[in-house]
Length: 198
Image (cartoon, rainbow, N blue to C red; front, side):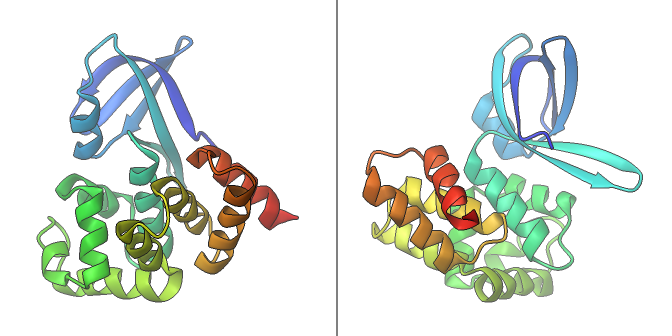
């Protein structure tokens, strides 16, 4: 699994980047939000979070500027029935991550259905399945109200995207934070994974 790409941009388009990593050119499909965030130019250094999506007839690498974008992408394709990578990319391209989170928390299917390719029923299914299956909205609400730090919320969302229950993810993250309150998101995820797997 390719989880991250760090290299120089060979080609940059609004929907894809080709990144040279030590002489190997990787093509990563990206949402418009990533393109806007990076303002990529040929020859510039780039650090992408990635997800390799494997199907019978294709291996497609998706790239994201932030962990948050990748986590939302993974939540959509893994936790919502009928949502594939192209629709998840359309959602990320159509609205900022924070706006998407707010729409899910508020149950605003009208806002979600403004995205190209998302009808009212699909928007309602996204809201229902993210609330019922994952408990993601609790993490988003707690982060918005300041009950958990943004690093803790991002770590929880990463663990949820990997299939852990929100309650278990929160306990594991809090355990790491209690030991070291200055932990980064990545160290929280690594520590919590060790704790959850032991």
